[in-house]
Image (cartoon, rainbow, N blue to C red; front, top):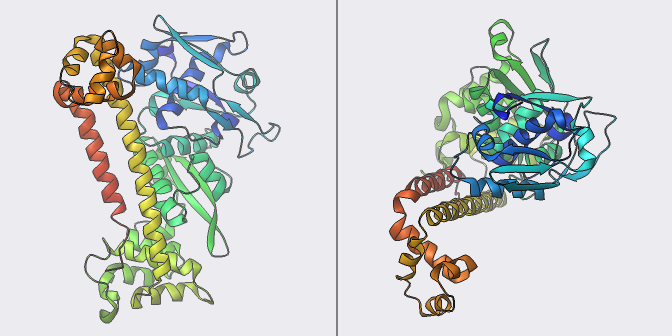
Length: 441
């Protein structure tokens, strides 16, 4: 069957429940490769697909083959832990590479799954049928992973399903969240859990909700419920206590504050705070951020018998915990630096790929850029080669200098959309972490 005619991938549950740092595009690409090979997994070791079909199925820019090659190469390098939710009780735990081999010849991609995985991938006892078109709509890897996990537990006959309670550390492993990222539940909920659920609910015909289980004062486990949207009007809300509440009231009710008190605080906002204890203007971006700090403060507060009462007083009297506030700022700064670093790495890769394509289409660009090199050291290295193109292909300082000149003087129009996207995402990240209050003022 032609890849363009394949709409779904049969994906073994253990392959969904992988502990991995896969990006959104890497996970999508592996799903497409699995769908293409599925019916011949037992009969063939080497599978093939044209790069044209592969890029079309991914909704990818067909001119950006170099970037896609790097994605395929990175998939082959990935080592993952399988079946960490243990849905298939007879399936042993294991570690494996996602692809044993991948190569491209004359526009055809040849690839091979590791021998130990082939039987697990074909005719599995426990699996989910995932829509390939839908996966291309997700913009967040967290949303795609959560979608796969939730749909793995979906019962088509009942039009609903739910995961088991997932320990928080296991959930972090499924999402590929690093140990130093989003170290508090508040930050994990704000930047990973809620955005993933929101994206699924806005893009699909299904509705996902989360239930939290506490161990003492901390949230220790999560359960996700999935329901087909067309059933929602005729069924009762799973969480009637928080339905139609404002974000502030919802946070307070979920922290077990009396509903009437939660509504009062949400409606009054800053008027609820003791006028003598009001924070300086600009300390918090909004009242929700102020509430979030007090809720987090209550988790570690000592000798508190009534957490709900403590939270209300902390809000009213603006309790301060300098150490907590310092740690929140440090965590936010570290997470911001990591996101900006990842964004810059991705931007440099895209820019490098586009410049390579431009040079491939017009090799004379290298000579034109080489003539404008001013650095004495770089010119020495350039002149040590027969041609500017030969020096460029060696990489190093010459290639870096030529790329910089091409970007600044010859390929501005080509790079403009990528640069604009990079700057917009930079601004979004800066704005996102501006919500962490600076109480040092």
